[in-house]
Image (cartoon, rainbow, N blue to C red; front, side, top):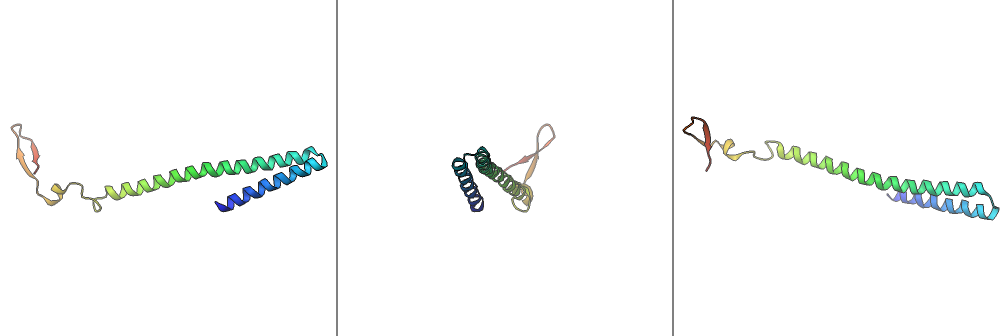
Length: 103
């Protein structure tokens, strides 16, 4: 971030220097060059902020994927402690289907 800030400050300083020379020499081409360099500095900052938001989004998605895979694995979190310990008792209803009898 500091490197990009230094580059943008250098571009703005160069732009101001070109524009000052344009005023001193009364040349349109130097004023145009200074304007283009200033636009490049502004575009660089805009891309920096846009990419910063995108990288934050990608980092959040990556962390969410890691957490989801961690919590969905059976070794990390017990899915259903009654099934894993074998303490579910079954009873038969009048219709004949099995339904768990939970504690």
